[in-house]
Amino acid sequence: TPSPWYNVISDGKIGCLISDRGECTFASNSREEKLTRHSCDELRDVPGDGIVIEENGCLWTPSRAIERACEYVAVHGCGFTELACGYNSVRAVRRVWICDGAKYSRLTLENAANVRRTLHVMYFAELVLGDTRQRAAGGIVCAFDGKSVRAEGNGLSVALTADRKADSVGLRAENYRDAAGRIRTCRGLGGGGITPALAYSCRIVLPPKGKADVVFALSARPVTVTAESAAAAERESAK
Image (tube, rainbow, N blue to C red; front, top):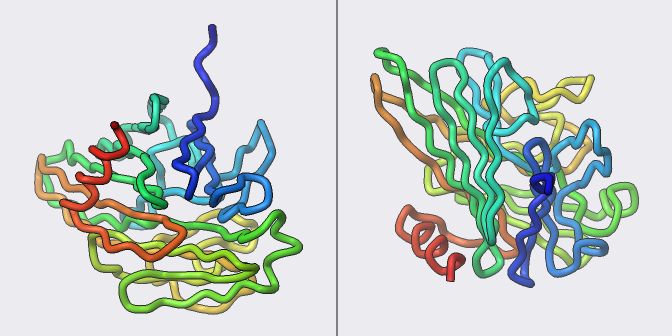
């Protein structure tokens, strides 16, 4: 039997579809209450939300959303998905799970080099807040409250935060994508645009041969994320 291409994780309050390349997030109804976009394209599978890593202008992801010359591993289990790759002398492992209306993503970065590294890690979410982007986009309002980036519209809401302070945030997809639609940066995310999106970027310093992690939460209501609360949510999701 072939391995599954997608994993479906949900607690009835929030859920996601996730593969080795793309993903999307929804509230209680995956058809009528999409929070982020789903490409519906088996070949390209453009992610509606996810994590991007940047160092000195070089971009990569733990999944195949930005494909590099490295080995990618995707493990789907009951209630979780784990995505991993080793690139640019950094091993990146992202674990995704859901608990109490929040989609958590823990990214662990391990430096294989004997030098200090400074990385920027961005979680982005390209918004729908309804059944289709075309019908719902005009009613979406995005804002940053100092702790999380949030959006409301069409009777739905979504918030994005992390257990680290934001280095920069974005409220439009044009803040991090170029004119051709490619992700071009993970930092300096301010600026204009017309496509509603949430982006939260953190600066992470890796010591020589050291490692660090960051936990993001994409939720239907604002949550406070700490290392302790994320660990508790992961234990609860495994029950």
